[in-house]
Length: 275
Ligand SMILES: NC(=O)c1ccc[n+]([C@@H]2O[C@H](COP(=O)([O-])OP(=O)(O)OC[C@H]3O[C@@H](n4cnc5c(N)ncnc54)[C@H](OP(=O)(O)O)[C@@H]3O)[C@@H](O)[C@H]2O)c1
Picture 1 (cartoon, protein in one colour):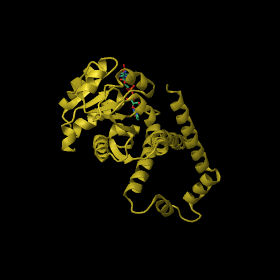
Picture 2: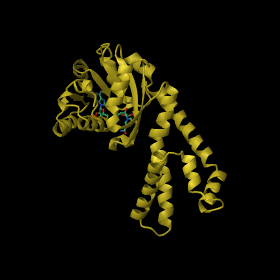
Picture 3: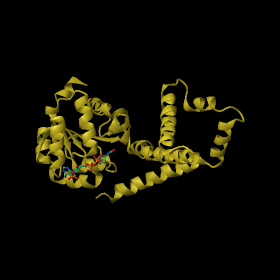
Picture 4: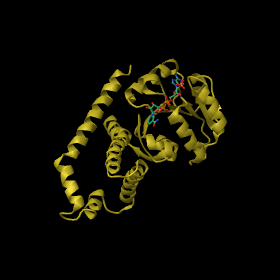
């Protein structure tokens, strides 16, 4: 962990699932818990976090912003603007503000946060076990110090990727965050089919998970791309080839692309709905 980051006071506005996963990762990664500050709408979660990690509960968002060098906005998108309104002028030019809220675009954050260096970050759910894919977008692409701060903060949750505009941010969110849900959908069909062939639910679950994990690990460790790996398991006129031909005839690719586009449309619609 970057030694500079260890000296920074890091605040979480909102102490839910995402904040808890990040706090765990940061403390395990070497950030002193005495430098972590947390607020929450209702106090129960703060007490638990204080007991588990020794972080500092703070009673108001204004006080949190006053104390911290880095403020992570970890409330639900529909609660974020209401949370920011009363504190919008409390940030100074050096404060780093990181929003993990889906659907609140950078231009809206800039309207609600005066001063401050801004980042939008999108972690997917495997971040909860340190295997996430985390995308981020800055309001100033040339802020190299902010690049490394965001990368250091989120590396405990998984692999971090910088994106350069809202379109890329949306594509990353759909393919990796919604994408996690799409992969689960396919895993359900896999598991059902295996169970229909006489395996117990536990066996079917194991066979499904290990197939997805094994294929992913192989793809991540191999020198060649996925297309070449697929060619290696597909002999001409063989069993895999017959299955793949059917997948292509049924236009699985088209179905997936349409689903991605529908998700993108819904994302835009939701962004418009958040007032
Ligand atoms: N969980 C994920 O895997 C994931 C992935 C990607 C992005 N995100 C993003 O992360 C953000 C948080 O999600 P989450 O799953 O952690 O939600 P969550 O568990 O509901 O946590 C949100 C927390 O914010 C608190 N809160 C609401 N308004 C507040 C305010 N004005 N001041 C202080 N605290 C306030 C809530 O308090 P109460 O206890 O009173 O409700 C709650 O504890 C969302 O924007 C979401 O889009 C989450």
